[in-house]
Image (tube, rainbow, N blue to C red):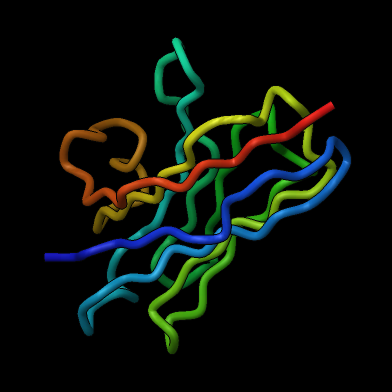
Length: 124
């Protein structure tokens, strides 16, 4: 079992930055890949980024590549999503997810552990 708690969301102007955190319970955090997803009102949940348990492998959605950076600190049982050059279309509830296998974070999201989400709002 892995419990995830997101934090760091808020209101920011376009062009600004935010850093989201995903704090995990348990002593096996390093064995789980972590992903970030987001869901805007009226839209389906979409993949944002993922990182392997060791942190050596990362994936990004094309829409955030070059602007967002996913990272993790296994000693702190925490993963991060640094979001720069934010745009109004980045407005959404952001969720972190965990899965032992990084490829399954996107392919079988029903098998992920999920956090409760944190709201990010980017104003014009």
